[in-house]
Image (cartoon, rainbow, N blue to C red; front, side, top):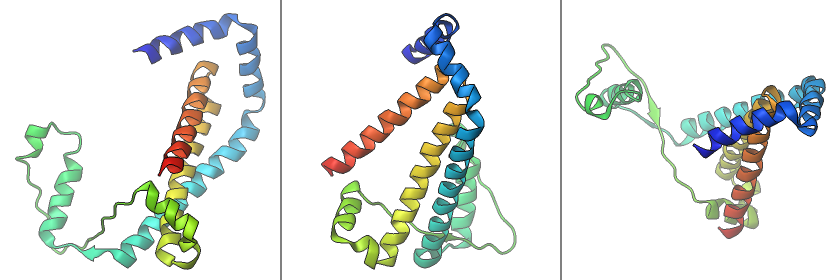
Length: 177
C-alpha cells in the first residue's frame, strides 16, 4: 500500500520538480543506448540459464513414468486454479509419454565454498551450477534494468531502488553464508 502511495506521489512530483523532469528527459534521450546494453544482458542471461538447466536435466535427470508425466501436466495446468479444485482434477494423456526430472537444493554456503575452493574451475557440475545461477541473475537484473529504462521516472526510480536493494541483499547473503 505504501509503495503505491509512494509511486503516485513520486509521479506527481515528477511533473513539478525540475530535477525529476530533467532526469526523465535524460533517460528518454539515452534510452536507445541503454536498451542496447540491457536487452542483450537479458537475452544472454536467459540463454545461459536455460542451457544450464537443459545440461543438468540431461546429465542428472531421471526418466519419468507415464503417471508422473500426467501428474506434472495436472500440476502445471492447475497452477492458477483454486486449491480445492486442483485436488480433484485429473488429466489423462493417451499414448506414449516421455519426460525427465531432476531436483537439487543448494545453499549459498555451498556456492561460496565451491568458489573459495576452486571447485567451479575443476568440476563440470559446479561450472554448470554457476552458469545457471549467473544466467538467472543476469536475466533478472537485466530485466529490471530494461523495465527501468522503459518506464516513467517514478517507476524507473522504483526499479533502480529494487535493483540496488536486491544486489545488496544478495551480497549480504553470500557474505554471511
